[in-house]
Image 1 (cartoon, helix red, strand yellow):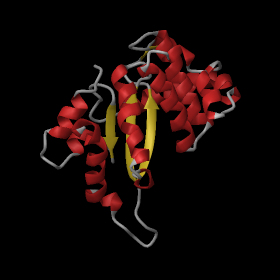
Image 2 (cartoon, rainbow, N blue to C red; image 1 turned 180 degrees about the vertical axis):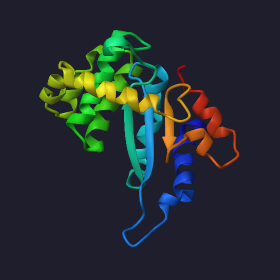
Image 3 (cartoon, rainbow, N blue to C red; image 1 turned 30 degrees about the vertical axis):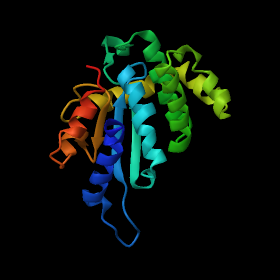
Image 4 (cartoon, helix red, strand yellow; image 1 turned 60 degrees about the vertical axis):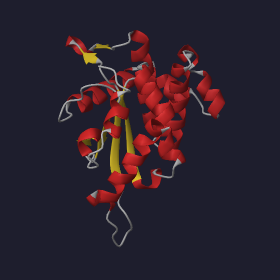
Length: 204
């Protein structure tokens, strides 16, 4: 149970101590949180399903500006071809999720779709990902047209550049960045619990 609560609890601490959380005339500013991950990484999938979803459940979303970056440990080769750590199907799902983010900018909408896909990854049923459209009552056309076209490839190249620009570079996935700093380095608790919990879910 402690490991399951580590990420939301740490975010609460960061939200309380972050300068961005200071209240002003227009209310508290949101803390920027970015998740760098890859679709078929089991650690990434479990992080999304078992931990990140708790940000929504625990009411943290009002204080968090959450960005999802589905690229992870992929590589861009000469000519712009992308290869992914877990093979071509991961590249497909990375692109599908990138297209979902682009098609539905509302975080509540694209996260529900990505959660559905990653839940299927956890259950080893990820080839049924298209069922998420029907389950959530979402029209598939925008995402389908995107991932089958150059637009999907351009989105992945954008996320490649964003991931490669990380300072310090990501060492594994999932990689969480809070206000520009990796989650572990951003922690000021001095406790090893968040470190252990996060390192237990990684893919190099």
